[in-house]
Image 1 (cartoon, helix red, strand yellow):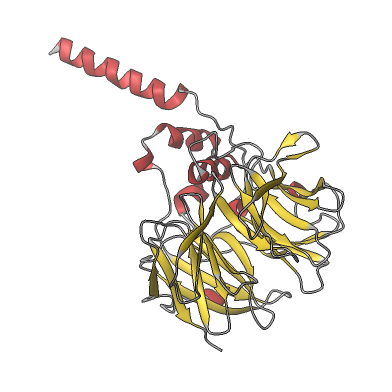
Image 2: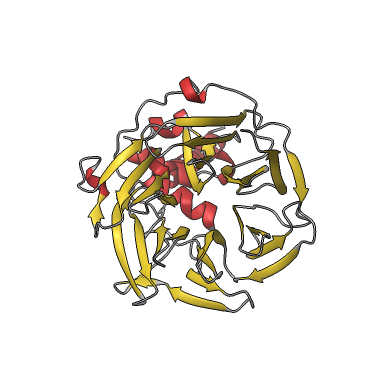
Length: 369
């Protein structure tokens, strides 16, 4: 009996030592997570996103970003690194191009080139003949590690997010794994960048974001809307600012918080019709994660657990639309999470296409007035 007790004692000590001391890649920062508001007010629980119509993508999955090109075709970036092209009804599907990375966001410039934020490759330009040109993968000599979303202004300038300067998906097992590390750590190293094709120069617009994600331009193109996923908020940032440190909070000159303490993790932003901007929530809030905000040791311990035990929030479909002054004008949910990790809506004259990180097909609803 003594030998058995000694054996289990050694095992217990080894487990404690592992959970306490085993190296992990994060150095968590203490931060103050606001109390989650829950699904109330404009976000009251509903099922308006349930029972989507589906377009099969075959073996492809994760139509993370969707847009209509100048050719009238629907383009969708998927997990495999492919950008698919198809008719708006989903027919005539083909692989337009494979970047060799993972495109998370894209837009089209005035010449019809597809401008892609590739999490592995940086900012790319893809011509109609499928020729890929790397525009930028560094700023001031510093690598762009996690290009996430991009929007092209009428003057040609391209604004895009570098979600994390700490965790590159190419080095940390992919986009999901790198995002988990960055959000758990809360070092707030995300930034907003500008690429000017006229000068081929890249500059920092703003920095200090806890996972800089979706981006959209205001109608007058003087303001950027940017999702800060790790802190559940949306910023308004003047396009003219330079190297603005947003880690100082809402008092930063040239930037204000439009939405704070949202009920989920905001992901993409997409301009819709009639002045709307669509926002998707990849996941809902998880009280276990919020409760660890001021407990760095527990966040380190979490990463020492098997991945199946990580406190990843449940699937919950949720998208909303708002106006530039911050009024919520639409809110669609599916509490079952049947269509997982909703990241935004692409709005056309007759359809709402629902973007997703991991869905096996492309969901859509008839557009509602």
